[in-house]
Image 1 (cartoon, one colour):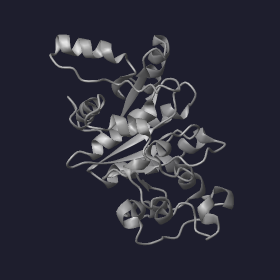
Image 2 (spheres, rainbow, N blue to C red; image 1 turned 135 degrees about the horizontal axis):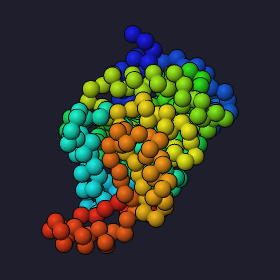
Image 3 (cartoon, one colour; image 1 turned 90 degrees about the vertical axis):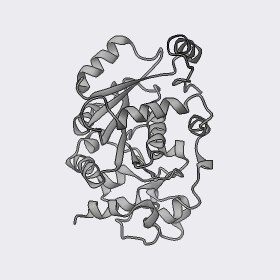
Image 4 (cartoon, helix red, strand yellow; image 1 turned 30 degrees about the vertical axis):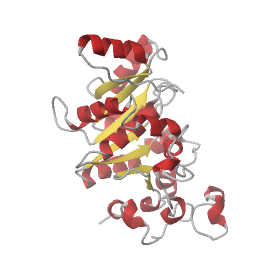
Length: 287
């Protein structure tokens, strides 16, 4: 059994019971609270202690509240992922957008929470936006070390995976921004990680939050490695031609769905009430 397989066997619940050896990180990459003791920043017992949903970003707490206008929208998105109209259920999903600030990280986080709330499903999120990661901040966990340390420094993966405060939902943060994000994400080691994650757990959905396609060439490469892509388009942000070019780059057969984000809520509610007889909130995530 390879090192990678062993890392996945150590769930966040069991990782606290032991401290596997890990390639030491440079002192500059260590968490300030761990430098004095000599422990690496990645030790789950240090960074995940007392973790709860109280540390979540207020926007994430609001959108995952069953009484919020957004909650049912993500349950419907979860149903579309778990029970597709055709073909088998995708296990690996890339969440991306055309340009920055369209809400892809927020959609990824909410979808992860929704999937983990399913009776028989677990979810893991991997922050591949190495230039501007957002998932660690949304869940209130340390993002000092993560995917970059595994791919570039061969750090022990079991020490990099974080609890989120949501049962059955874990996170592999991005880590600190490297000088060569495209080369790291296009490496054979990244491909091996995606394949191992897909094969290791039949009940786990893996969500990869990738950088916007217009600024990162590696997104198209990552799209080829996963089962499908969810494209996030923010109302009023991307031009139609930009979206079309990006969709062509990804491959239309790879795009499983589109989340139209931040559409004026009152307009959508009026349409649903008029056409369908009920009024659910939609994706309106502007601060």
